[in-house]
Length: 245
Ligand code: FPP
Image (tube, rainbow, N blue to C red; front, side, top):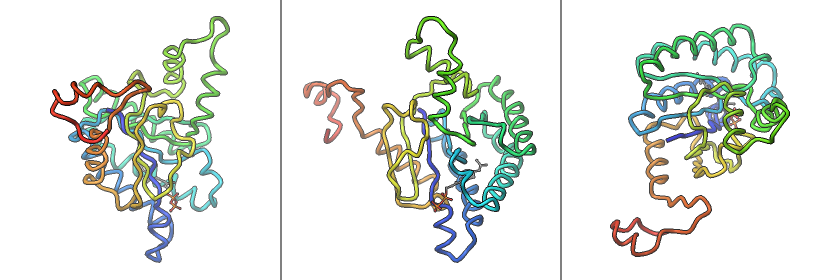
């Protein structure tokens, strides 16, 4: 199961408490820890977190700087826990505009947890940093070699190569967004083609394992048809009924 999360609302969470916005991002790192720790036990195989969008460069330089150093220390401090928890880590998005120290922390975290992967990881944690879905799709298209146009499957494979996130299936099953906004904000546009969407008014620093559990419970109640028709009523009755369609 692939779950992707747009972690929104750190700034508002902090402002409402009379704290600087960066305090919200700090509390957001704690929420990341809670979710990563519970994900594998809840049946999540791949978890993609939107930590910094390519549009986030528009924020005031002080906030961008604070986020970059939080990400850097976050990656370093959490690394051992990721390894202990059997997580493999990869980062998707552009690297060239990130501060050098963060680039190094990413390379280190990926290299160290690649060994976890060889031993059979429990969770593939993907962090989207300086990420734009449109840019990723354009980059994949631009680097497609001349010749026959790609099939969907080959293009998707190529997109994964471009993103550097390995061979895992990339379709998102469940997309979660906190913070009350109902939009995708250029996150995983290709991969979310058939994702179930789940929104909550909770701000990201308030999000925990119980919320992830609730989102997954609703996901499992939903009927995914992928453009097809619902199963015939007889089949529904035979399987004990799955509730309202
Ligand atoms: C959105 O809230 C949140 C972000 C732009 C940053 C999210 C990053 C983290 C939680 C750090 C992740 C750390 C690791 C180690 C993966 P916002 O600032 O847009 O909130 P607002 O909408 O209330 O202003």
